[in-house]
Image (cartoon, rainbow, N blue to C red; front, side, top):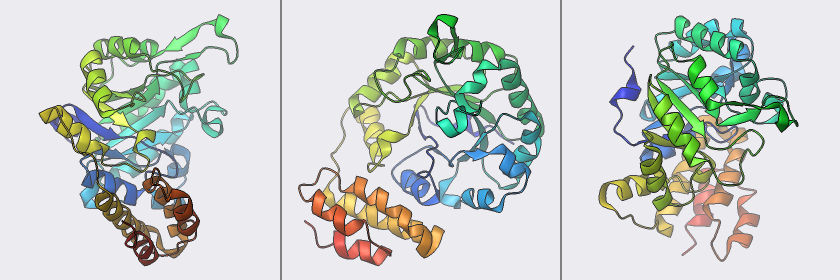
Amino acid sequence: MENFWEKLNKPILSMTPMAGITDSAWRQICKMWGADVVHTEFVSADALHYDSQKTLKMLEYKASEQPVVVQLFGKRVDMYPKAAKVVESLGVMGIDINFGCPAKKVAGHGGGICLLRDMDTVKKIVATTIASTNLPVSVKSRIALNNVQGKPEAGQTTVFDLIQALSDMPVKAMIIHGRTYETPFTGPVNLEILKQAKAAFKTGVFLINGSFQTIESVVSDLQYTQADGIALSRALYGQPWLFKQIRDYLNTGSYKEITWPEIKDTAIQHAHFLYENKGALGFREMRKHLLFYVKGRPDAASLRKALVSVETPEAVEKILNNLN
């Protein structure tokens, strides 16, 4: 199968996995606003190996979302061959392997970012996955973690160790979050390390993650690091139009602020997508998105009280259409 990463216009604007967020409805909205590539929520290779129907349900997608990449996590090498074959059978465009998640439920059991402490297993997972699929395989990680938890004096494993370990494999893309495991989401990213990592990675495209502050800063970060693109995650909460704004700024040097009618229409469309995808019970997940969409409005507090109990897209429409 062709490597879709090579055909994307640069800089690539990607949406990365977020548990409980990046479902089909969210991916459709991000594509509507200009995302070049979208990821599913990260899913367990073990679950796919054992034919979990709940996990397979998470991987349902619409043709309009393509290119779709499925991100796998897990620390057992023997789970990946079947998982990769299952993912390929779904018709998506790529497989990503998670070596960056800092969440306790993943990293706390030796997965995610903590797998980097066992680079031999990392190499086996990537090599096994590549050998088991015709899809392009990418990896996501962070710039570093301590070799021994809580003991920085024991040294670090870094993104450069990962790049070296995978240097003889055809990894088609690498997404690196510019913070360490020990500082997962706060504080400045290390743009210098990201720049050096981009220069060191030779087998595919290199995307930076975690650095979003403003539209303008995205462009300056891309210029400084010479990265092939940026992968957005938490910055997208309630503002999927960042993709269009960034692309406009890259192309023209300016961008437009989003109006309330545009926000409202996006939220309503999102609600319909989610209801179609998950039905009445799953629609409750829309409430958290709605709170982000109205954030910053002077009447946000009263809106939150109304939006946390909506049960249908029509209820969302009724509330939002009455606002100026």
